[in-house]
Amino acid sequence: MGLSGSGKSTLVRHINRLIEPTQGVIRVNGEYIGRYNATELRRLRSTTIGMVFQNFALLPHRTVRDNVAFGLELLGVAKLERWDRAQEIIEKIGLRGWEDRFPSDLSGGMCQRVGIARAMAVDPSILLMDEPFSALDPLIRRDLQSLFLSMSKSLHKTTLFITHDLEEAFRMGDRIAIMKDGQIVQIGTAAEIVSYPADSYVAEFVSGISRLQFVRALHVMEPLAPQSRLIAGAAIFDQQSTLESLIGPASQSQNPILLRDETGALVGQISREKLLCAIKENR
Image (cartoon, rainbow, N blue to C red):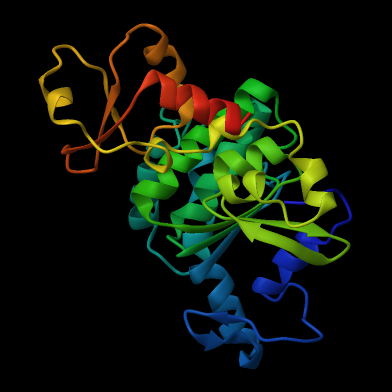
């Protein structure tokens, strides 16, 4: 994440050697790709690393199905096999029924879906996403963000996502690198960056963001009191819930909120008083 001119798009193009690095080493799956010849590099780009740009160029004379299957065609995959794979991705991306339409029939958001589907059809282990949603309307952008997060999780993809939008970075990123003038000034989770900015530049970026969106219940919960297990109708939430999400339920009951772990076992509680103190500390 960084402002225009910070170097983020230049950096990401080094990963698949669209730009040759002047210093340093790039390893993909442990292999130094600087030694790859032209054939090996093409193979890397076509099978291991997919890339989606802001304005993804679709082939106007090809249908949605053939656009999605294009990468598989270049790899020599038989027609019926690549169509089957394309259909699978088309349905995941929400374009079922549009397989035989052409790019000119599609909206901007739909074209971007086709671009993402084409990148994912060859099943790359790594995806480079260079501001893929920034030209779209806000509602369409948010829908595509949600769709991509769901697909990426279910298909187990490692994604390097480029954005100049802090909200998008925090929503999409497990870990975020903030860039300025060609340098990475901080790497961390959204909670770490908001709570502990590395310098005044990062602090200025996050100054308008409430930490309540990122501090988790497990960070402030208290030990579970024996009698709490017996409270009828007590609200129970995941320990990964944000403080912000607990404000409403806490305002509706005098009872403490009970917290469970990933197995469903009760592991702690937060009283209204404790939650209020945590809110004051993290506004």
